[in-house]
Structure formats: C-alpha cells, structure tokens
Image (cartoon, rainbow over all chains, first blue to last red; front, side, top):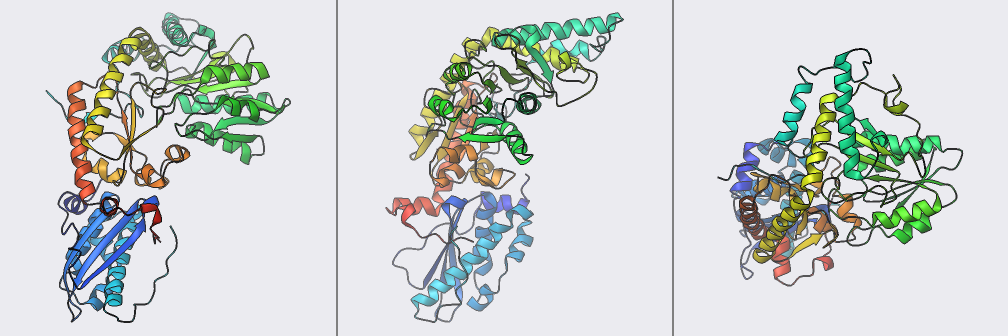
Length: 138
Length: 406
C-alpha cells in the first residue's frame, strides 16, 4: 500500500512527540485504543484557564497512519478553544492526510483522543464532565 | 557494495535463480512445443523436457517420476488433494483432520467442503511453538476420517511439524496423509517414504523457480492414492489434472529442484549462520524482543520476532528499504492480526508487533548487518513514540489497564 506524502512526512518527522512533565498543571490526558487492537494513542493537551489549548503532545502505538493522525492533531488543536477542538471531526483528518478507507479508524481514534483529553482536563478542573461518549471494550 | 532495497521476504517468494532462467529460456523460443503433441519432434522435445523435470522434482522428495502431477501452484495442489480425496473416498467417510496454523489454501478448502456439507473438519491446536502434537492427530482420527492434512513447515513462523511421527499414525490408521511442503522443499530434507506422506503440495517459486507452476505428489504404491480431479479436460497428468503443461515453468521447476537438492546442505548451514547473526544482533541491541516459533525445529531461513510496544506496519514503514513482512492487522487484507501468531497463545499485542525475516539464497552477511542496524534503530525510534513503552517503563502492567476502544 502506498502512503500519502503527508502521512510519510508526519511519520518521518512527527510533531510534538512526547509527554508533559508529571508535575505540569493544566494538562488533560486522553488515552484511547487498545494494544490488542494494534492502536493506542495518548494525547495530552495543555489548556489555559480560559479554555485555550496552548500546547499538545502525543505518543502512539500503531501503524504509520495512526502516528500521522495523532501528529497532525497536535498541530491542529494548538491555539484552538476547547469548543473548537471538540468540533474537529475525523473527516478533516482523513482529508488532510489523504487516508484510504482502511485507515479511517486511525482518524476516528485521533478524534476520540481530543475528546478524551479535554474531558480529562475538565474533570481535573472540577467541571462537569463532557457527555460520556460510548465506549466498548476492544 | 550493498544494493537497496534488500529482499528478505523469501517465504513469500524467491528470486528465480539465474541458472534456472537459463534452463527455461529455450522453452519460450525454439523449443516451444506442446508436451501433449505426440506426432512431431516439437512435441517430443517438450515432453522429454517435462519428463526430465518430473524426475528432478521426484528426486528431491524421494518419489517416483510418475507420482508427480503438475499444477499451477500449491494452492491448486492443496485444493486438488483435499477436494479430490474427500470426493473420491466419500463412501468411506467424510472427516478431515487439519491444524489451525495451516495455509489458507488448506483451511479454506476445508471450509468450502464444510459449507457444502461434504465434510466435517477437526482443526487441531498447536503448542506455544506452533507445533502440532502427533498424539492429538491420533486422537482426532475417527472411523470416518479420510484425510489428515498437516503442513511440513509453517510459512510464518518456520516451525517444522513432527511429520514422520504423524505419517506413522496415518499409515497405521489407514488414513490418507496430505502434506503442504511448500516451505520445506529444498530447505530441509523431505522424503515421502520416510515421512509416510501420501500426497504432497509443492511449488517452484519458493525454491528459486518461477511462479505459476507447482505439483502434487500422489503416492502410487503402498497404498495407491486416488483422487477425483477438480479440473476437467483433455485428461493430462494421468487424468488427474487436465490442461496443457506449462513447459518452460516445469523445466524451471525441475532445474530449481536439482540445484536445491545439490546445494541444500551448504545453503542451510549458511542461512542458519546468517539468521543467528541477525537474531543475536537484534537481541543485543534491543530489549523485549520475542522469538515466535520453535527455537530449533524451524526452517533455516526463518526468523519471526515480536518487537514489543511497536506496531508491525509502522516498523515496516520505517525500514522501507528492507522487504520483510508483518503479522500486524494493518498489513493483512482482513485487518486481523496473523492467525498463526495468535494460535501460539501469546499476547495479542505481540501479534501486531511481529516481523517475519525470510532469509534466502541471495542474502549476504553485509545485508544482515545493515538490517540489524536499520531495524534496531527504527524500533528504538518508535518505542520513544510509543505510549505502551512509556507505561511499561513506568512499571504499569499493560494487562491491568482498562483499555477503551471503539
């Protein structure tokens, strides 16, 4: 299978790889996927009290498209308000990275990771949790 | 000089040996006859070449020439053996014994017969090394069993089954024994009499011959095995497989077998040395690498490793100048991780992390060293990017995590 130039670029030069320091504040962490499914994404967002995403980090166990999707998402969310970030749909990831149909689940996982990270941040801030998205054991 | 990309996927297919190409070439041009043309020299010449090849192929498995039936490849041979036996012996019974790690050509032939209501099938499990237990074969055989089909060596993990022991049991029980020996021929000694094999699938392209030509060995004596053909036509190949013979392909298949038989001992020793070098190099540079398959009872050129915390397809992408394959779901047509690796009972995650190195005749020590560096470098890079590696380093038991996945 041939990869798109953008997937290759993100895979070879992933943006914002890593984790924030443990003691850093204002961090929301989302971990989605499962090892037995072959995909696990960890997305961390640093969010100001005003609800603006200042910075992002990711780590991903998964195929090249999963790595590229998470790398792209870290770029996409930076500077956005959380309501804007929550409005990001996987289809825009598919479009940007030119993902083939078999890789659409990678983009879905990346969308889920944004939601999970913001939900975690809200919980830490003592805010009402975002609507629980349905989850199923993988 | 190292030439890129490096081909290390010799279980998928092999490069045609230049000596084989030389043997084949005249049969595309001046010697183009149809081996079934009985009345002129063009036909005789083609027939003579086919019979020579038949002898070369028979020799490498300890069979007689007339026991070799040419086919289009091992998938057809497997289909012919399984469907042909079940149909021919339908008055005797309808039960097949096979194993969960067989090639799809065997498993799907069995499933097709099950769906059609023509057979019931027992799929035997394998141990953690991917080996079937001969005692399990014995226990699975009933008075309705007409066929046992177990591969010689597995195409993914390289494990060699105890074929001679299984053959002893099937002979004792009077059940036909089919063996898909595609990966074993020319790599390890295979002898149909010593192993008690009645039907055996072979293909040229796994032993440095051309694609599109294979054979089915059909035992002629002690006992004589009968089959119903699956392709009807002019009655070629003693009525078992109609169709004009692929003369150049067959000539190449014969030449490939002759070379393999002559060079097998030296080649196997060389491949084991290269494989040991690759395995040792990777284990030295990386932690948490696991061997899939049997530590000793395995094909000389096979090394199947799981690199924990790294997904296989992403690793393949990172080492794009090295051609290997992975058991990862993302590299399969079904989007399921390898059923062979999963059958070993290891963690599912390790199936996604598996890489098959298939070493062959044309690989060099220099290539091994390049691949060692390339793979270990990329595994390290991807582990630095892996949340699983990070969690494992922090002492989190990955099995205790409540994963949420869609």
